[in-house]
Length: 325
Ligand SMILES: Nc1ncnc2c1ncn2[C@@H]1O[C@H](COP(=O)(O)OP(=O)(O)OP(=O)(O)O)[C@@H](O)[C@H]1O
Ligand SMILES: [Mg+2]
Image (tube, rainbow, N blue to C red; front, side, top):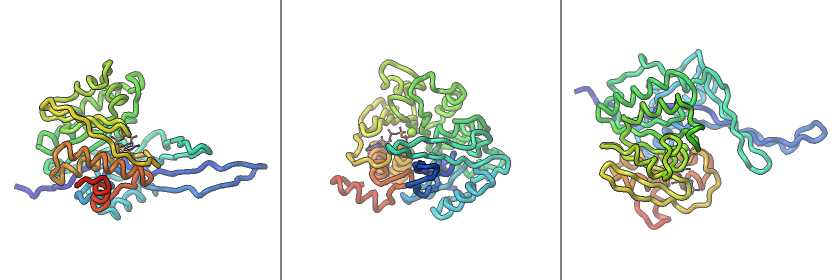
């Protein structure tokens, strides 16, 4: 029996987030110009970093470009103690930079660049050690990986199949960011539906993403459609909380924590990390959803995508609500 790999693998997008507060122009000159800020981002990289902070031995699997942003992300993974064995560097593509322009009203306008040959859509299957994948403690990914065309759309469903059939728990966060079925690109839908059969946990936004994927008059029926033997579905709705649908036919709600929201970016990504960490730290599904909700609420009340707690911070958060982890 070969040594088990035993790390939680997060597969997918890593990009950098550049936040720029739009300046005013007066008489052709800029005034009130604030320095832009650069931070690691990408839905899956966010989850990987948050997981690692929760004492889960984590690896990132995905592609960055052979460029300065790619190096920035690799350095960040290293500093966060994330295994980079599955990180691929592709000289033919570019690491995406997600510009967030903040206007006077505080509204964020997101613009991803480049629009073509984005590194996160690339993945070379021949470079992946499938035996290690088969003994990982977890495989998690996001539907964001399917946003643009590339090998990820066919390789990711295959990797989910390999992991799932080897008994590795798997989770997919829909993250299609669609409100209606018409907004869901058929190719993205195809890739998502090719992945779902190999998911132990399938999560997403209740009333828009699950509805877009399988429209029903009642969004609960959209969610129920994806429950199957061995597959639990977690449907979320921001401050309204989450609903869990188990293969045993149980359905229950888990409330969100009441916090003052300062930044909801990456709430879903941090929820995923809390949930996966909860299960890997031995919690049942209900408590893992509570962990997901707590990690997300902590983040929402503290700052941007990476403002998630470590284990002590999480315990303290629970304590402030009179709960135990
Ligand atoms: N304002 C809030 N207050 C408390 N908890 C929140 C708030 N917003 C989000 N959360 C928590 O984060 C979880 C995920 O948020 P949400 O339902 O918005 O997911 P999402 O739409 O996938 O987010 P994202 O935009 O990051 O993809 C919620 O289930 C909830 O537990
Ligand atoms: Mg989401």
